[in-house]
Structure formats: structure tokens, C-alpha cells
Length: 79
Image (cartoon, rainbow, N blue to C red):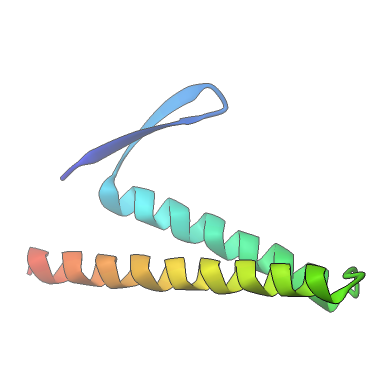
């Protein structure tokens, strides 16, 4: 298993590759939820802002799908 080091508020944390993937999934899902809140609360002022937020959500969703596929493939290797 590979270990990935990254910086978070000045502290070095170590986690395995699955832990890192789960961390990213959590952060991406939180980002999507916050963007959905902006859309549903009517905070958008113009179509350009709407398109930007929808595009960000689409990109984050694609990243989540890729991470889930990767985790599934890693699971198969462990079997």
C-alpha cells in the first residue's frame, strides 16, 4: 500500500491510498452539496454564474465516479 502525505493546516498527515480516496470523496460531496444549496436558495444572480456552478458540480461528480471505479478495481485486486 502506498502512503500519501499532504499538508492540512500546517500538519502533515499520512494515510493509505484508500483513506486518501475516501477523504477526497467526502470533500467533493461536500462541495457539491454547498453548490446545490447556492442553486436551491436562489442566490444565483445570472445565467453565467448558474452555468459555472453546474459545470463545477458536473466536474466533481465525474471525479467522484472515477474515484469509485478506482476503489472498486483496487478491491478486485485484493480478492
